[in-house]
Length: 224
Image 1 (cartoon, rainbow, N blue to C red):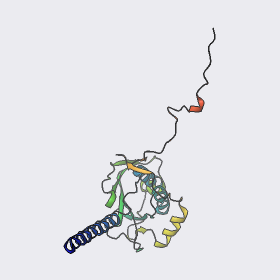
Image 2: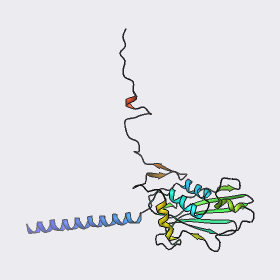
Image 3: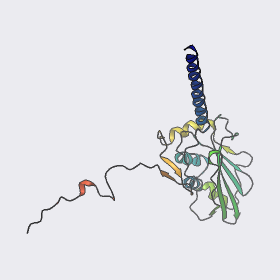
Image 4: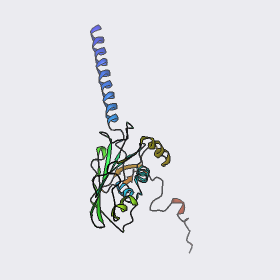
């Protein structure tokens, strides 16, 4: 009898240890995937750069598009007379700089000739699978001054020796100014073009093909 009780207790202790190990590994797995399930509409991000009047306007536009609770900071640097690079990042340590593991995307603009240019967006980290095609830009297009100024005669790059970076004190201002965030993202999956679609189950009820039950005509008795 004593031997049987010893075996039962040993089995229970072993089972409890196994369950505890599963619980810890599950917690760690979700901790490492935090903030990676928020879809980004890349088409709108590209359009935000094309329409922005400057870095602060781009900050506002990008954070109105992004559905997560974090704020995306912006760094703008002119690499040379024809090339500008914009970096979007999560400034998790409030350093005011793009540190390791914080980069989300880069948008690079390059002037290729008189009145012509191109831009391309590349994702990083959780968004590393996104690479936009080379997008053409040119003078005469509907562009904000952040891009259109590069086509002006006598243009001089502004952010060469002193790049623009979102100051940590602006993060709270951006968070307050943008629309409130839903408790959960309504986007389930991005398409190949970067657009997102609503999750399934968004439409319920007894209506089919745009006809409601209450719209059906009442039956009429036919008489000879």
